[in-house]
Length: 487
Image (cartoon, rainbow, N blue to C red; front, side, top):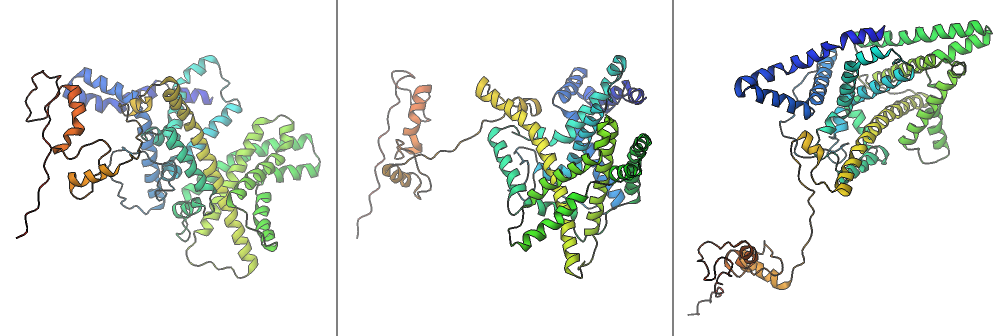
């Protein structure tokens, strides 16, 4: 049934949508330069991946507009109109947290990762087990899904100059490690400034709450029906209570106790606090273990789709609790716990929240970085093995092979060359390399080998009797000016 709906929505109607989107540009160019130029420009736009750019642009604009309609707080932000001539960092550690991931994580990367996981779960659950006729009819839906996933996850990096340069990619990896693994944890300050914003007030709306409730209830009904069927087969009351409790509750008990008890234990033992990244690994492992233990018996009877529905439900419940924690820390006004117990609970909730949010950023950034590494390996193979100098990435996106990486080397200078620098400039601000005679006007001696090889002559000199190949006549050296005699 769902395949039939998708075929109706993403059939030839999808192609008509693409043609309608390109129609204004086609007609304008046709009127100005002719039909051939108009068609050539449309083809060039498609080859240079402009659909990915405009899909990502629509995603960013839609996120901003919907957020301002729901939450308010619109303001003018000066973004500049500069051309992308410099490569931007993957994660902004050196440049005041202004990397591509920092800018677009909340707007597009999180949703792209969720969509990718959802597609993988649909494939695992057998959602593509349809007839061959329907599978071929779904080709337009597959194309739209591929373009959306690629754009939401990789569009800023595809249009980033020299993105696949191996040396720059290594710097990105160092920035990633510093962003998440350093003792100062720059990720924490970035998250609190851009997403948590303590004391800013609750940013939620009835529409978003209703959406979460509908999403949770849908998968709750699916899981509850399967658990009810399971309890009919095994009518033991203890089994019924255990199945309902473990299947419905979110997997937060183990990770919550870990975040509460471990800091207290380390403080009692006077040990060094555990790094935040250690809590990230711990909460990921504990949440996964708790979720699979709760659904283990369903997994044992081979109800794979029910297990997937249960995992989605538990993910939705954990996400809801994380949003509630963020709302609690966004309350305006001072929130001072009355005793040490309340302070410990508050610290544990903050640590649990930070560990889960950092885990999300680690997984999403590693996913994007791993796919980009494939392009870096291809670029290295092109440059080092094949020996092809032009970059296909720059040729495809910017229609230009790009410039090779520049290297800077120091040139050793002799004392005679340093002394000659004062004859040339008088201030010593310019230092000539060895072998350059700066005593001649305009650096003639440095230009003579090139002039002799090319057959050119400096302006003002006559041709030598032997023709262009003969050496040009040398000028007499400039005599040093004598100081006036003392009177």
